[in-house]
Structure formats: structure tokens, C-alpha cells
Amino acid sequence: MGVDLGDILPRKKTSLEELSGRVVAVDTYNALYQFLAIIRGRTGEPLMDSQGRVTSHLSGLLYRTSNLVERGIKPVYVFDGEPPELKEVEIKRRRKVKEEALVKYEAALSEGRVEEAKRYAQMTSQLKDGMVEDGKRLLTLMGIPVVQAPSEGECQAAYMATRGDVWAVASQDHDSLLFGAPRLLRNMTITGRRKLPRRDTYVEVGPEVIELDQVLGELKISREQLVDLGILVGTDFNPDGVKGVGPKTALKMLREHGTLEKVIPHLKEAEFLVEPSSIREIFLKPKVTSEYKIEWGKPDVNGVVQFLCEERDFSEERVRNALEKMTSPIEGDKGKRTLESFFEPRVLQ
View 1 (spheres, rainbow, N blue to C red):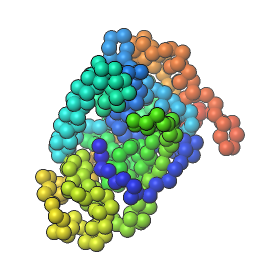
View 2 (view 1 turned 90 degrees about the vertical axis):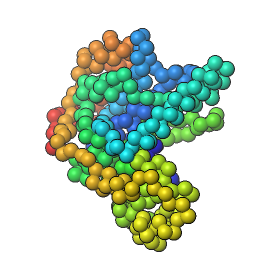
View 3 (view 1 turned 180 degrees about the vertical axis):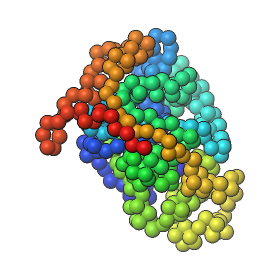
View 4 (view 1 turned 180 degrees about the horizontal axis):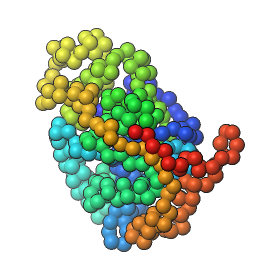
């Protein structure tokens, strides 16, 4: 879910080509759920191997990552660790939503309502049965760095961005900004043609950049106030927020009164099930680690083929073509160049 800041954030469109040469920390769980939701069969079923193991997430990691690397983008995948205790309510809510969606999916499918079934199917995605470890294994074989966060992946990614080890955090959620990421890169892992829900219409989805300094400058608030704005609207740690308060109302009140504590007396309903100061601490003093390495290497082609083709029934031709894209020459603004330098071992600590 993440904090929903709607249309109040200034943003600018970009392209994968313009991101060439950039090091980007990917909020991996966010990306994996996108792959699990989008990469599905005709009736909404996930891709599976001959043993019934879901492979949609592996397909997304392989083909999307090879596409990014081919364009000179350097992804670093950051995995979640233990979630904060305050997130337990949101985790339970999400689990219930998925369970209810599964029932509706099966009912719609049995009654032949295929389009409706596909919509519900996208809501049932879960990371389970070794999917995370399989994702790490594939990325490592592809020569892509993996960072294990002690807690939330996006706060670890934001920390890496504040240190200058990565240029931006790639995620669909706005939480990275509350965690202090100087740049949030949206739509990077879902760029392309997408069908609008419940409509027979397709749109072209492209990456966009949201810069924290520009956000704070145009909204005329501090980062601390941005966190308070998130608390009013609702975060993963207080999903309901304050009833009747959306991003625009929260912004107006914070500009007028300064802090959440000074806003509360002016709210009609302000029952916080979680102490706001506890939520603030998660965003302003997140649990992160500086003990990580960012190192790229050439893909282990035989290793990837062994894993995906021999163990998970992927097409060997398609897998080899994807890996070839990661190492083939590309055309840059200054003429022909290869990605040899891209894969030369490089360590950032």
C-alpha cells in the first residue's frame, strides 16, 4: 500500500534511455508483487513450471532486468528484512484482502466471467514457498548486486541514496521520500503498454522522477512535516490515517499549524491507534545497515540456464537471448560502446 500522496507531488517524466549510467536501488518486494500481479495467463493464473511452482516473479526479474541493463541502467535489488512491529496490522489487512480476492477469483472463473476473474487474480499475489530466495539466486547468477535490509527494503534503499551510493530509489510507493530518498523513480519496472482496469483501453506507462528537494520546496514544508502529512493520510504503520483527511487537506493544515500536534486540536476526529511519535521514528530514524557491497559482474549464462531452463522449464532460447542483451554492444550518444565496463567488478561500500 504505502502512503498515498496522490497528485500533490511534483514529478517529471523521463525515459529508460535518459537513465542510462544511473545506479538505481530497486525496492525488490514492490517489484516482485508487480511481476506476480501483471505476468499471468489468459484466465489470470500465474506462470508455473511443471511442478506447479510459480515463476511469474522469475520471469519479471529476468526480462525486465536484462532490459534495464541493456539500456545502461545499473539496478541494485534491495530485499526486505523483518518488518516493524507497527506494520503487523497492515500485513494482516493485506492477507485478508488476498484471501477474499481468491474466493472472488475462483467464483468468477467458475462462472465464466474471465475479465473479472483476471482483476481479482491480480489481488491474490503472495510471496511464498522460497520465492524470495529464488529471486536472490537468479539475480546473483545474472551478476546483479543484492542487498539484504535489516527491516524495510525501501528505507534501506533510501539510506543508500542519501549516501550517494545509488542515484534514486525505484518503487511505486511514495514512502521512500518520507524515508529521505533524494529521488523516487516510479514505473521503472512496469514501463510499457498497460491495460486500464475495467476498460478495453491501453495506455503507455513511462518512468517518472520525483525529487525530494522539489517536493519540499513546492509544497513549502519540511521533511518532518512530510512525515506528519503521511501520518494524517495513513501509512503502512497506521493504515486508516485520520478519517476525512486527504493529502490536500493535510497539507493545508500543516502549512497553517506547523506540526501534527498543533493540527490535532483542529480535527473533528483524531483517534490515533498508534502513537504518532512511534511512526515518526520509523521514518526519521529507520533501521538500516551500512554493511553492504554493491558489485556487478558478468552473467553466469550456464548457471542461469541450469536454474531457469532445467529446473523451472523456461525456454532456453528466450533465456539466452535475454542474457545476450545484457552483454551485447549498444549505441550511445558518443558512438558505439560495449557494456564490458558495466560488468567490470566495482564495489561501493
